[in-house]
Length: 484
Image (tube, rainbow, N blue to C red; front, side):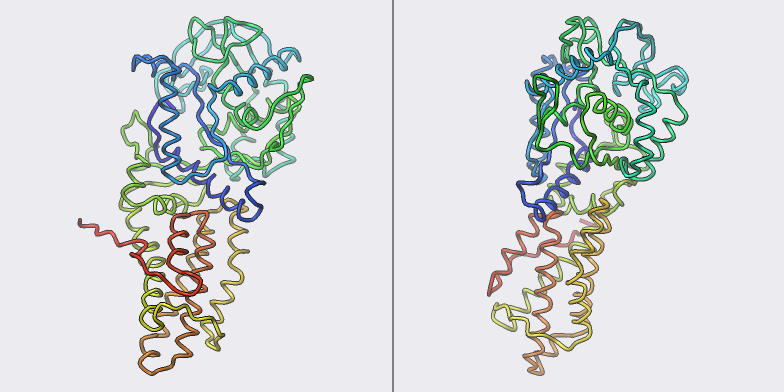
């Protein structure tokens, strides 16, 4: 969190928000808990604060506020926002360390290796690429010091067996195979979980060694349980919300979530989350976005320029969740004009216009139709929720939206084929009523199905389609002139 949030940050959180909204609609808000937050410790944060002549706490207070404001602006409906500098988190981390230390799963030893400050990761010599970090390609530092280690190696066999028995624990399939292959080809080394205070003061102190603070990745992972529960006096963890159904993250931190985290939980005697899903990266000109490359795209700028719902729609429609995608303004404008302006916006606006023109703004009740095209639309309406649900269970947001848009496209074709202006000229009022009744049913169904993805758009549709009369406003998505 030492840099301004880019679209990669918003991608994860918007996806989680869509799932939370979708599940609240089916399970009730009292049965859904959506957590996000900021991890605020580590050498990277300490250095960034120093560069701005700020104390680390002051720096993270400001940075955390930026993320909170961003989520508000993007319509993110989280139930809790945890900061790892909060007392509730610090207390839980220290309790975890004490439990594992007493159990003998944490021990002290000398460490020598290569450390990447931006990634906050230790690397062995063979893992380096021409002396640089294999992830971010930046210089690493040689470190030799006494630290505390978590016995990760002790649990390699257990983790491999768990993955074999639970093939859906890590998704998508490519990430599952990546983790399995990593365990097959490598012997896990014990995880260095501390830093000496003389090198890093900004961290959670180890209660059994005041000269050390906790390694940021060991600390940060614990947020998932520190936010929703606590340990009793005997070291048993209690929470209404655990185990989590899902953890969402980008694929570059899959090792921390699919190797370190499950072993930590298992060592503590805590059940594992049901699924860990690592989505792909948003690339810019086929390169991963990063501040150092100067190719970061601001989610605030995109949302303000194209609209919050259009931005949310683009992220989840353009690329199947789990795969990498290339971001460009040309792509978002194309998707906006075709899917949102031409398809959805046009259907809503032309239906409102016809209701005003032909029926004085009154919404006719649907009286049935013998039209085979209308019958096919009804079949699609009746099965749409089940289709969307099947895709949402797979976290296939793109496919869920595609099936919703299939109904929108059917309705637009129905307009072109039926030519309602001719029905009006020929005074075929009953047919016109039935025709518009079908369109209203489509729009209401679409509104319900897009509400998790595009909540403001769903509200706008509701406002324009009252119980008995319509109230036409401006077009939902005015076309963008590419030449402007």
